[in-house]
Amino acid sequence: MSHFTAYEIDTAPDAARPVMAGVRRALGHLPAAVGLMAGSPELLKGFLAANAAFEATDLDPVAREVVVLTVATRNGCHLCVAMHTATLTRHDAAPELVEALRDGTTLPEPRLEALRRFTVAVLDHRGAVADAELDALLAAGWQPRHALDVVLGVGTYTISTFANRLTAAPLDEPLQEYAWTPAA
Image (cartoon, rainbow, N blue to C red; front, top):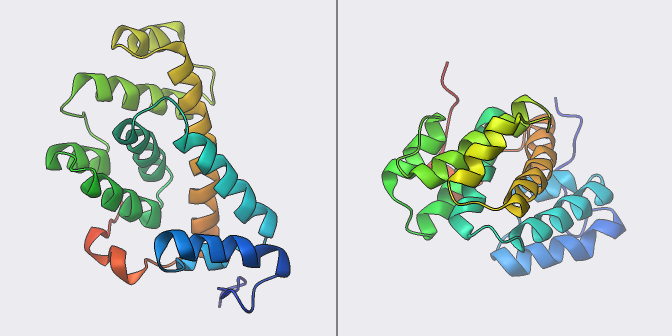
């Protein structure tokens, strides 16, 4: 038995309705996870605002997905992994990159691998990243602002992955082909 309601726009709390309608307009459908997050309109609004800020960072779309998938796999969010696998596929990312991100293994491109490793360090050390780890990110061609952008991505997708896991958000039909199960 779930303690959470999967709201539709017409049954959601009033404060969540316009936000949900905006998501449906943008995506063409209303993801179940959004309906579940709507139980706290503030959570839903907060995640979407943080996500919009992360999308506006100086990280390119594939780099942002490296951060997101690193967080999603580490936090075991099957929904986020599937959703962002679909996003990388739309960006024509190399299958080897997608597979490595889903498996949490070394990425084939050194610059993106440095970003992945830095994201792992931020997660592992709760932001207190050793100088050597930051230096490795910078040596790969990233800038100090990108390190801060990673922190924003980690925060944004911690909200999403935790909420999705707490509510047991299901995988929407369009994402079934990207289903993911954590390695045992």
